Length: 251
Ligand code: SAH
Image 1: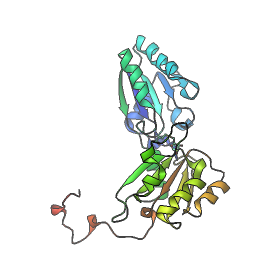
Image 2: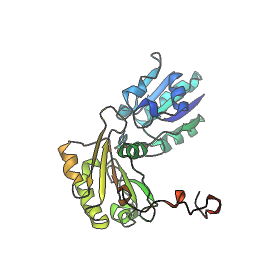
Image 3: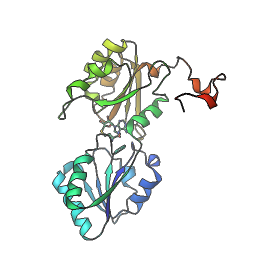
């Protein structure tokens, strides 16, 4: 018996990994993050599967489901939105399973930052502009470590993918404009890959107004950086003068 921490992907079931889809189709017991996992993904579960929405459960309660399942040798699918390793709170769940001696495995998923980049049809990295992507959030009930506040991260001028924060878009855009310039591209993707996906594109000076007008307050990714500009320096990777045999440090 095992608990499988499974990445449900951003929403559309055709963005599940084959492994995740197989586990869902054969599942007998599933604990899912109800607020974010899409109904289309949950529809892959057999009608006979026992299901629990973790949104209204404590850690003790989700652990108890796993313990009960272990007594009847039933595998559990613990379904997390996107990739379980990003804001998935799997660490504490695993610690509880360790105490009980219950085995587990992680099945990665496509994260919402990747689905958002796809919706924007953009590359998140750009030669000489940004070779770093920062996945971050602003503080909420979980405070931000002091050295990782938005000002410190913005100083690097990396591409930023900001989770869990669209409700603070005005404040975020204002802060980032100090470092990236008010005309830097900024985008918000609401429910990437869902049927009601919305893509808002603008600059740090226009994006907040667009978000407020569209009344987007949750389940959205903020993407900011000069890498989103269409113009720029082409990558050396496909340069005619760039021999693939002699790349130093590039793959
Ligand atoms: N593990 C998830 C993130 C969970 S935190 C992942 O890898 O994607 C929840 C936050 O993820 C939301 O507040 C939002 O910022 C983002 N998110 C989740 N699903 C999304 C989607 N389909 N489109 C845009 N953002 C999404």
